[in-house]
Image (cartoon, rainbow, N blue to C red; front, top):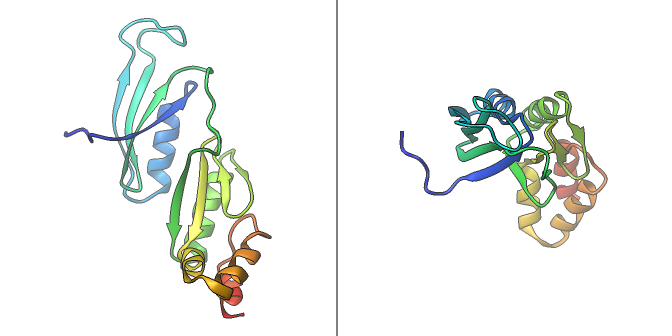
Length: 159
Protein backbone atom coordinates (compact mmCIF):
# COMPACT_ATOMS: atom_id res chain seq x y z
CA UNK A 1 0.00 0.00 0.00
CA UNK A 2 1.29 3.45 -0.93
CA UNK A 3 0.59 6.24 1.53
CA UNK A 4 -0.73 9.49 0.16
CA UNK A 5 1.83 12.27 0.43
CA UNK A 6 -0.86 14.59 1.83
CA UNK A 7 -3.88 13.53 3.92
CA UNK A 8 -6.51 15.15 6.07
CA UNK A 9 -5.88 14.38 9.75
CA UNK A 10 -8.96 14.38 11.99
CA UNK A 11 -8.50 14.49 15.76
CA UNK A 12 -10.84 12.31 17.79
CA UNK A 13 -11.03 11.68 21.50
CA UNK A 14 -11.16 7.86 21.33
CA UNK A 15 -13.47 6.93 18.43
CA UNK A 16 -11.42 7.37 15.24
CA UNK A 17 -12.04 3.78 14.18
CA UNK A 18 -15.81 3.98 14.73
CA UNK A 19 -15.97 7.24 12.76
CA UNK A 20 -13.86 5.88 9.88
CA UNK A 21 -15.95 2.72 9.65
CA UNK A 22 -19.15 4.80 9.66
CA UNK A 23 -17.85 7.03 6.85
CA UNK A 24 -16.81 3.95 4.85
CA UNK A 25 -20.35 2.52 5.15
CA UNK A 26 -22.10 5.76 4.20
CA UNK A 27 -20.07 7.21 1.33
CA UNK A 28 -19.07 5.45 -1.90
CA UNK A 29 -15.35 5.25 -2.66
CA UNK A 30 -14.61 5.22 1.09
CA UNK A 31 -12.57 2.58 2.89
CA UNK A 32 -10.72 1.84 6.10
CA UNK A 33 -7.25 0.71 5.07
CA UNK A 34 -5.35 0.36 8.36
CA UNK A 35 -5.77 0.52 12.12
CA UNK A 36 -2.64 1.18 14.19
CA UNK A 37 -2.42 0.58 17.93
CA UNK A 38 -0.38 2.49 20.48
CA UNK A 39 2.91 0.70 21.17
CA UNK A 40 3.02 2.07 24.72
CA UNK A 41 0.89 4.00 27.21
CA UNK A 42 0.28 7.62 26.31
CA UNK A 43 -1.40 10.52 28.14
CA UNK A 44 -4.81 9.78 26.62
CA UNK A 45 -4.68 5.98 26.49
CA UNK A 46 -3.02 2.67 27.07
CA UNK A 47 -0.71 0.44 25.05
CA UNK A 48 -2.82 -1.48 22.54
CA UNK A 49 -5.54 1.18 22.20
CA UNK A 50 -6.30 2.35 18.67
CA UNK A 51 -3.98 5.29 18.00
CA UNK A 52 -4.53 6.04 14.30
CA UNK A 53 -6.83 4.86 11.54
CA UNK A 54 -6.07 5.28 7.85
CA UNK A 55 -9.18 5.71 5.72
CA UNK A 56 -10.67 7.56 2.79
CA UNK A 57 -13.92 9.52 2.46
CA UNK A 58 -15.28 9.72 -1.11
CA UNK A 59 -11.75 9.16 -2.40
CA UNK A 60 -10.08 11.72 -0.10
CA UNK A 61 -7.28 10.14 1.98
CA UNK A 62 -7.57 10.75 5.72
CA UNK A 63 -6.08 9.65 8.98
CA UNK A 64 -7.95 9.63 12.26
CA UNK A 65 -5.94 10.27 15.41
CA UNK A 66 -7.22 9.30 18.84
CA UNK A 67 -5.54 12.17 20.65
CA UNK A 68 -7.81 12.53 23.66
CA UNK A 69 -10.16 15.33 24.66
CA UNK A 70 -7.74 18.27 24.22
CA UNK A 71 -9.18 19.43 20.86
CA UNK A 72 -12.68 19.39 19.37
CA UNK A 73 -13.71 19.68 15.73
CA UNK A 74 -15.44 22.89 14.65
CA UNK A 75 -16.92 24.41 11.50
CA UNK A 76 -13.54 25.75 10.38
CA UNK A 77 -13.15 22.33 8.75
CA UNK A 78 -15.88 20.46 6.92
CA UNK A 79 -16.31 17.78 4.30
CA UNK A 80 -18.36 18.99 1.34
CA UNK A 81 -20.18 16.16 -0.41
CA UNK A 82 -21.76 16.95 -3.77
CA UNK A 83 -25.04 15.18 -4.44
CA UNK A 84 -26.87 14.67 -7.71
CA UNK A 85 -30.50 14.64 -6.53
CA UNK A 86 -32.82 14.79 -3.52
CA UNK A 87 -32.60 11.05 -2.89
CA UNK A 88 -28.81 11.16 -2.50
CA UNK A 89 -29.05 14.37 -0.44
CA UNK A 90 -31.62 12.75 1.87
CA UNK A 91 -29.58 9.55 2.21
CA UNK A 92 -26.39 11.30 3.38
CA UNK A 93 -28.24 13.81 5.55
CA UNK A 94 -30.21 11.06 7.27
CA UNK A 95 -27.12 8.90 7.79
CA UNK A 96 -25.19 11.71 9.47
CA UNK A 97 -27.97 13.25 11.56
CA UNK A 98 -29.61 9.89 12.31
CA UNK A 99 -26.42 8.48 13.85
CA UNK A 100 -26.27 10.96 16.72
CA UNK A 101 -25.48 13.99 14.57
CA UNK A 102 -27.39 17.23 14.32
CA UNK A 103 -28.71 19.59 11.69
CA UNK A 104 -27.42 23.07 11.05
CA UNK A 105 -28.27 25.69 8.43
CA UNK A 106 -27.74 25.94 4.68
CA UNK A 107 -26.96 22.28 4.02
CA UNK A 108 -24.58 21.86 6.96
CA UNK A 109 -24.80 19.17 9.62
CA UNK A 110 -22.48 17.58 12.17
CA UNK A 111 -21.89 13.92 12.81
CA UNK A 112 -21.85 12.46 16.30
CA UNK A 113 -18.10 13.08 16.58
CA UNK A 114 -18.52 16.80 15.87
CA UNK A 115 -17.17 16.72 12.30
CA UNK A 116 -19.03 19.16 10.02
CA UNK A 117 -20.49 18.11 6.67
CA UNK A 118 -21.91 20.16 3.84
CA UNK A 119 -24.37 18.03 1.89
CA UNK A 120 -24.57 20.12 -1.26
CA UNK A 121 -26.71 19.28 -4.28
CA UNK A 122 -25.02 20.09 -7.58
CA UNK A 123 -28.04 22.23 -8.55
CA UNK A 124 -27.14 24.64 -5.75
CA UNK A 125 -23.48 25.05 -6.69
CA UNK A 126 -24.43 25.46 -10.35
CA UNK A 127 -26.99 28.14 -9.46
CA UNK A 128 -24.48 30.06 -7.36
CA UNK A 129 -21.86 29.78 -10.11
CA UNK A 130 -24.35 31.19 -12.65
CA UNK A 131 -24.26 34.53 -10.85
CA UNK A 132 -26.73 37.37 -11.22
CA UNK A 133 -30.40 37.05 -10.33
CA UNK A 134 -30.33 33.26 -10.57
CA UNK A 135 -27.62 33.08 -7.90
CA UNK A 136 -29.38 35.62 -5.69
CA UNK A 137 -32.67 33.69 -5.82
CA UNK A 138 -30.99 30.34 -5.13
CA UNK A 139 -28.96 31.86 -2.29
CA UNK A 140 -32.05 33.41 -0.70
CA UNK A 141 -33.85 30.06 -0.88
CA UNK A 142 -30.85 28.23 0.62
CA UNK A 143 -30.70 30.65 3.54
CA UNK A 144 -34.11 29.41 4.74
CA UNK A 145 -33.12 25.71 4.73
CA UNK A 146 -31.43 23.18 6.93
CA UNK A 147 -31.19 20.22 4.53
CA UNK A 148 -31.18 21.53 0.96
CA UNK A 149 -34.42 21.05 -0.95
CA UNK A 150 -33.45 20.36 -4.57
CA UNK A 151 -36.90 21.21 -5.99
CA UNK A 152 -37.01 24.53 -4.13
CA UNK A 153 -33.53 25.48 -5.37
CA UNK A 154 -34.51 24.52 -8.93
CA UNK A 155 -37.64 26.64 -8.67
CA UNK A 156 -35.66 29.59 -7.29
CA UNK A 157 -33.21 29.30 -10.20
CA UNK A 158 -36.08 29.64 -12.67
CA UNK A 159 -37.53 32.60 -10.81
